[in-house]
Length: 217
Image (cartoon, rainbow, N blue to C red; front, top):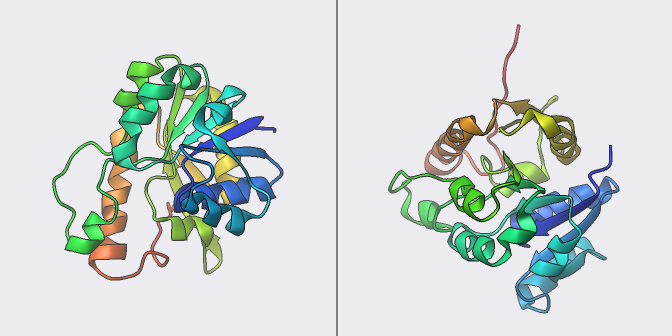
């Protein structure tokens, strides 16, 4: 199944890692950033070779699927500026409302609060098909998702309507998709990040060394 045009908003480690895998899978991927000529973007160009990188509005213009992969601090402004271009599209929220690097620097989770950006997105893009995915692990797990003889599971939620496509994108990263329900289960998906951080970061097991799997009979 073709995902059509995938717009990845943000070119950090999460966006670059997922984008690279989707490009390798044959998808049309366009990164959208504030400044396509910045030094950070130059790193992504070097890492991914011929990756297409444009402004956010250019990336969203013809997008069918949007991965929102900016920092938590940037989400509100990005959505306020480009909400109309997110509407009526499949939007995967991979953002976390945390100060980047703060938990690792302090060694503690800090104030518990809503991690996802669903409310922010729905306010500006009420007709977007929202999914929550790719937020529960560090980018290192997306880069190397196989542990021994099995793939890590990725918990996600969102409407059943586009389930096949979203699960295809998860599978192409190398993970096994596990849907936990519709958008009402967003907090369930978010809780996996706290568990992952407790083990990988605070207990020192390593960001690349911890992921989860569901055992079924």
